[in-house]
Image 1 (cartoon, one colour):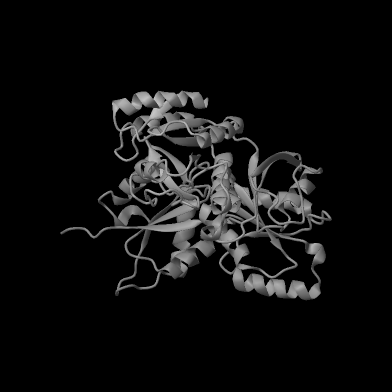
Image 2 (tube, one colour; image 1 turned 60 degrees about the vertical axis):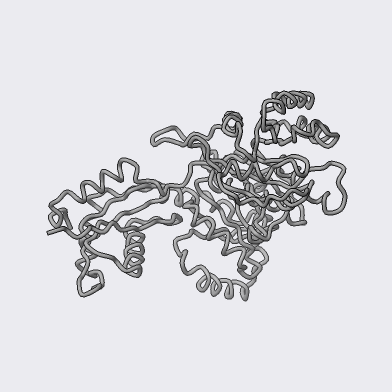
Length: 467
């Protein structure tokens, strides 16, 4: 396997592409900041959301209460990405359904990094605006005051009245016509927290571990157990934890940063209110972590929720340790059926490290540290190019790729394009079947380990030469 099959510099140019920025598929180094758009009903919040995201997705109608649930959108301004949350009208004096809508808006404000408070400048300051501004001043979050429906200079002069809300300078904007919307976004960007990516070779802090699992599986109990004290609230009622909780814990002479997360109850589209924002923060916490401990109730059958959480970790590209908790409640019969469930339902993740523990009694909790260290070592492993190509040469000689279209594709060269997680690129003369790529992945694991870490094997197919 060498570049002799390619004398037009194709491999060299493709390698240069990888070096110059071929890591586009690398996940973001941290969670996206969240901007919540709040305000009383019918001030133009959804119209402003459509203006910011550059497309008409939020439903807009000239009656109050159209937006009931909170809806999230990916937004981008001047190269900065953030999550935008559109909320229903926030009226502190609301009752019935309007009260539930207002509660979701308040939750959004509490969990956001920046609050974009929208006020109708043509109406002026109302009692509801003053009540909401009082809540926002106590929240301790950056607040950007948007004076909406400012379509001309005359209304812009009237918008100065909004200084009386005590939230700083009102920023005039017309969500409908786009007037000054860029200036407003500049102010929002300045208020966003900085999340610079970690560069190669830069000093890391403590290794970051996210605790994930469905509600009431024992995440907070495990955090208290490894910390040796009651650091987070534990209650038999599911859903006690809403926000991710960071704790520095010393284990095995090493300091770790454990992130206790809210339990993921069901699919995102089925989540309501605080559960929705808790799930959003859980995903952000996972993106901030390097390795995830997925807790599963060993005394109960594996559920769709358990499998969905495992898939979430795999999609994020994080290292993973699966901890079967409540092992003190597992008898011989349950162990037998649990093994069968694992063989049947976790067949695609045999690489995940497994530990059987009991957070309540402390049984085998000490085994988590070696498992975490092995998973992170695999996640950061880089295979030398010469060793990788020697291994693949021997592998292909013993088991050639299947013939496709009457021709047998060749693997010309291979390189590891990235770590965290490891990603391998095969330069080939033709398409490799998915089954063969899975075969290569399996043999890579047998040869180089990668226990506890996902790996990716992709192709770059040489184009046919023109005569």
